[in-house]
Image (tube, rainbow, N blue to C red; front, top):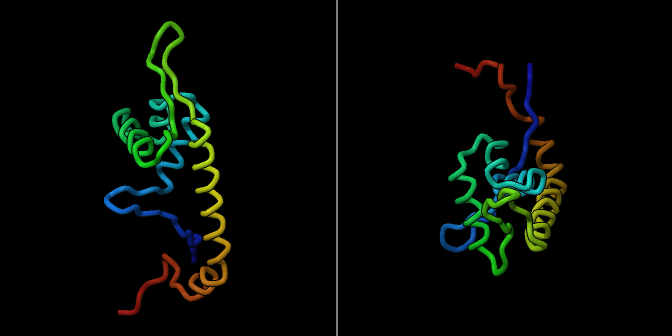
Length: 123
């Protein structure tokens, strides 16, 4: 009987419709790794347009941009995380870890009391 591990997910909802969560943070990590918004989107099986819209959301949500991009030219375009973007990513990952640590005992209790995925339910 297999049990997949329980995983808490941090999502911060701002007043209005803005949200900050795992997907945007993963996109920032891929931008850092690839130097490209479109390549970061491809790494996440995301359309070019969707990746650009998420970056635009991030840059609009805060006083400082998280990502700076440069249009293609002789050397081609690219994107980098700003200092603020690096701080945002680091703080979000720290918040995720703090949340996980705070919930360890509760997650263990939930895990110990849940029905395994392949166990039939009572009729």
